[in-house]
Image: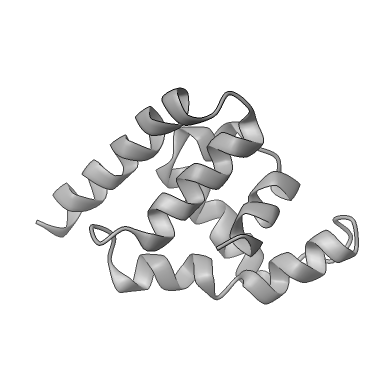
Length: 100
């Protein structure tokens, strides 16, 4: 059941941005936001992304020179679970995480 609801959230991430935003940054932000706030993703899935906020802030502030372990885990998770996230740069995803 958990996999089915996660699949539905991921499908929403891949379809909704096509209607909501035309840029990769907008799509990435939409997908990250959907995954972090969705009731269909498990709490541990949300936690991976939300715990990366401090690392994302360091990454953005250092212009990509500081890459924390939690940010790396979140980037990997997002890319594995969202087509729009695969097309977005690390910086775009880090900024989207910060916007949560």
